[in-house]
Image 1 (cartoon, helix red, strand yellow):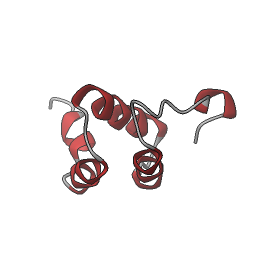
Image 2 (image 1 turned 90 degrees about the vertical axis):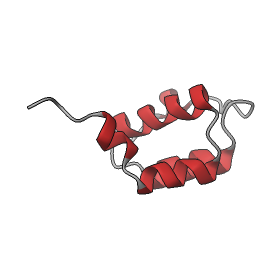
Image 3 (image 1 turned 180 degrees about the vertical axis):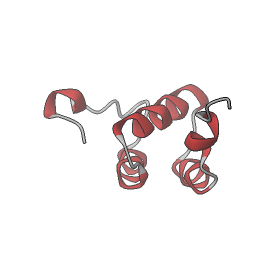
Amino acid sequence: MFTKNEIGSQPVIQIPWSTIIELMRLSSSKEEALWYDKQITTNKWSRSHVVKQFELHAYQRQNILPA
């Protein structure tokens, strides 16, 4: 999904490893993972909140195109 250079060093202060692992496990695309990553850092979501947002399909709901 991501190249070695894109992963780089992990910003532990911003996102814990357990949350990153959950994010990678649940994301179906790179774009989805990056959207959730932004939400995690902006809104300071916990791992459990990230999982709940995946269950609620937050990414899909935020990216609905107008008819």
